[in-house]
Image (cartoon, rainbow, N blue to C red):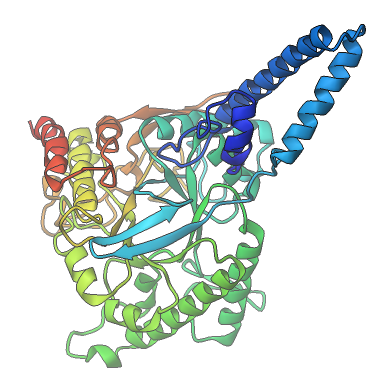
Length: 494
């Protein structure tokens, strides 16, 4: 119900003794009222109207000589109804969804949400109780269960300053609206775009060929159906297509370095991928022009191809795991494309593969350092100016991610890949990235009702302070960012 701020215009507010310009709540950092605020507002305005009606009834009874209080009440009610009608203060239907766009000027790009710039303080979010895996669907549970599960988690997210979550398709529009109206949190809706394979002619195909006309027809049909279903949903922030699909193009393993890039099989596949992504973005925006479309790429691989092909895409989403610093990510992206960046995944796991112990402090330090660079490269902060924000990976641990289908009740400590950017537990030749430990919250056991408790780690508490910084706040010089982050990093570095 994003249109509640227009429920009582200024002129009517004066009639009802409500100061003009204060008939609605001022914009919060989420640029809308929650349902609790809306109920309070309605209760307040209705009370004032009732009080005005009583006062007018007493006035008419005393000054017109009316002997019947009921007649005076009727006269007063008719008079107020007439005034409200003349002033255009009749019932206003709430707006169906908001307007989101990308704005560019000399100092960079900003995401504009309902007329206000919004820095995306996002979180990759899902709901998988211990003992379940990717086959579990929260959205298939009873409504009462979903409401409580959302209350448990969205309250924490809201309190730490998160204003957007990343969720894959499958969530019903009513829950996107619920999350927004109850907790002030937007949703970036993600369609995987064949990233994990698809079914063609009744057969499962693990590697998606984006040059196959059947694949193109299927995916374009799915994303246009998505746009039709979610168009106008309150709380929808933007559409995200794919999930580092470029990493899924290397079917035959590593390609030798002596093959020219333009002749590699993966490059040819990438050309078809990005061409189809662009068609999809254009198709989505024809149905829903009120929301931007982003694509999700693995780091900056194929950046030149993206710049030349994805001309109808609004935002370049990047999954990036470079360690404590993104190094040249923002500058290189700025040099290669006009698209602003939204970091759709980044973060650190909370397990030290060398010591075999939990690594809360290291996880928190890496996340804070990453967010500092996200803000540094926002518009007006003096650097690249192409950062729209990001989505921390992730809210809670995924106990199913290592073996996928077995040992689902075991918090696995096997590292599945190596990354030298995470120096605290990197040993050349050994894996150090633990997929089941990326949560900024640990996950408790499942109770009899099917819920679990989240146990915030140091990263949760650190990011709660981090997200108090707003690069778009008035009179916010770049030096203020250093002052904000210095004590947080100093404490975590001890």
